[in-house]
Length: 311
Image (cartoon, helix red, strand yellow):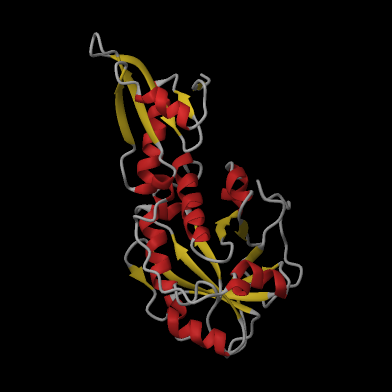
């Protein structure tokens, strides 16, 4: 399936007039920007019987707020389109090779949040270097890749077999959608376009877009719809009732099990990632030995002893 993606830069483009099987349209960026022509172009795309992709451009703002913002804006079309996260390193304040674990976790949290609240399966957009040089195993196990990699800057029309370099896509076996040029040339448009090839059948596109399970959705999404809070992630320490002092170990409950942290940097990175991805501080409890709530909690989750984090 052949398609192009557009933003406000192509505000005068009518998707019904420019040939394609699908059109990708930028909807939002960060927690405040809305593409002023996105909905007009969505309606033109759908009225022409074309498939639709809607994407959000990530920034350093709270990722949960970004996902909520995107869904609130795009909600009337969220189950008629493949949804995508545009992950570009320059916009998150770090250039390769300085993408951190926190940035990759943020991207996956956005995808998880959107996936849980729509019928389809979103994809993540990135360039080939970002896909290959960093560990995206967790993300790739759940979500498809929209990969950008260009053979040249020469103008081109649609290609059925575009150049794909060394065919290495990091944690992914292959891209779901492949963007092979930013200098595309198509009828009825004088400017350059990003051209894409989707390795999807009609049925596969519909499934990823969630069209089969489409329902009216007027929900207003808020940051209180927070999976991390629902999973009860928190840390705690045990206070000796006789001395009033901590026993020294910090325990981390990750939503599934309790882990005894073995280094202060482990606590630091857990807190940093939680803050970066939710905009909130990780909850910390102090439980005394004369009121052993930590014992009762371990009983409640059916765990006999904490796991020990390796050093």
